[in-house]
Image (cartoon, rainbow, N blue to C red; front, top):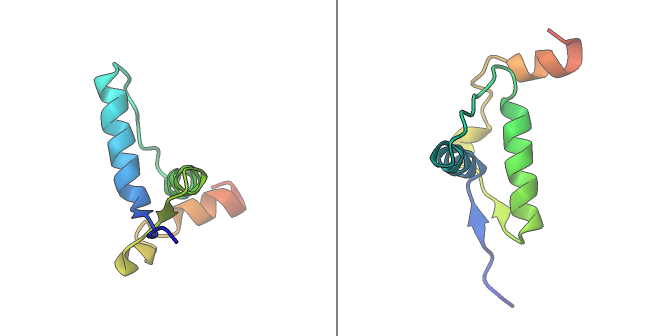
Length: 75
């Protein structure tokens, strides 16, 4: 059985942002869309056979539930 591969989805987001800048794009991290970014990065990793790994501290809600409010209430 092959060794499990893991990668931090937050690091992937930073990597992709840097790549897009190198390619002439101007990515913006929109407020309240943290959940979308992390979900997308995690899904991409899983699709490539790599498990998204988050440090325990990253599981904390540090954006003050902005992403939750936007999804649930449209605020």
